[in-house]
Image (cartoon, rainbow, N blue to C red; front, side, top):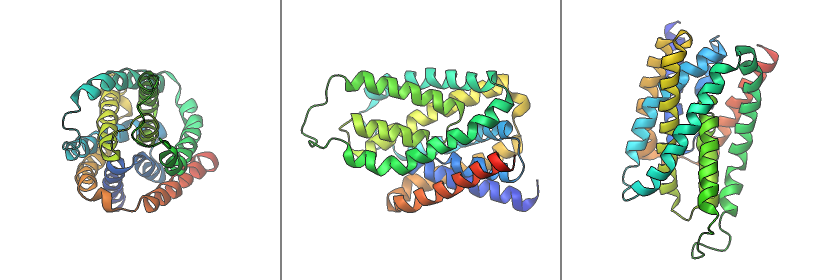
Amino acid sequence: MSFWSALAVALAGTGAGIINTIVGSGTLITFPTLLFFGVNPLAANVSNNIGLVAGGVTGSWGYRHELTGQAPTLRRLMPLSFLGSVAGAGLLLVLPPSAFRAIVPVLILVALVLVVAGPRILARAHPEGDDVPEPGWHVPAMAVGVFVAGIYGGYFGAAQGVLLMGLFSALSLEPLQRLNGYKNVLSLVVNVVAAGVFLLFAREHIDWLIVLLIGGGSFLGGIIGARIGRRIPPNALRAVIIAIGLVAIVKLVWFP
């Protein structure tokens, strides 16, 4: 890998760390970048997942004030993310690389739909107002949703944050910034578990230079995202994510 390509991967890691902390979908920056430089899709996914753990740590730490007093909720949701991510990482290891190459464009397309639909999901959440009590079915529905998001995140991860934020916004009356804190912690759980599975069972697919570049970039990105994320226009972020995701789909489908 040349100096300029390594720099591009590191910068992509920084961008992913920022976007993961604020919105989610940072993988839609790093993963297509790795594909652009000719990295095998499976190796790119595994190495990218391990590298982005660093950004998840700094991003979650940056939202620690929003999560004050929320330990009971996190204790209820984190095991579901844990179990889901184990199942998702297992699917990635069991399915052949050819299946992964065929499935990835669909996953990216689903992620892009979630990114586009995000504002409408938030706008339609709780139309009756925040004073209305949460229905009893919201708790089990959220549990199932967090588990499914964990499977998705353990398998691929792109737009996992968007999926979680849409779920939380539709089922919880907590402030948006607190929900974003939940999202960061649960996404970190998924990434850590998936990274552990890959370290144990998929070492041959790990490119440690990529892990180092993305890890260093995302570590910085998580700090930046937690500090100035609220000032970045969401529509601008969504436009960048959509553009890069479409490039990834075109490359995988027509230029494998």
